[in-house]
Image (tube, rainbow, N blue to C red; front, side, top):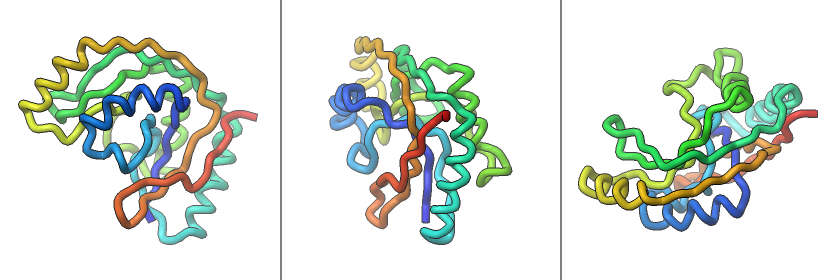
Length: 170
């Protein structure tokens, strides 16, 4: 069973992001706009996934809700043709990420933490250049506080769905 941990922003921000994802993200239908906290990891079955929830609940008690600030459009070029909304890195986001990316919790991350919400991916070089040119004009300033983290699992068809939502803080 493939799992991942994400932060889902408000429906308002998701709708704004989906305006672009519909056109530019080949994973649009697989998962709503999100900030990845923990990359994909695997457990054997649903009972083990429930144990993950219990561990997450314990860890989440000591982590306050996180503020996010959408900064600007950025990209991962030349490594990947991915365009995203950059989220300002904060101590609270980093603390949340660190809590779920260590050997005590299904291993360390394979990439450095770059908080973001994907706008476009799966693009060839020409598409990437066109999209980055268009989206570089896009200006979105947004701030909000996220109070829950989501444990998601992948279905056989590649789509992700929420297994459980866990409240941050006491």
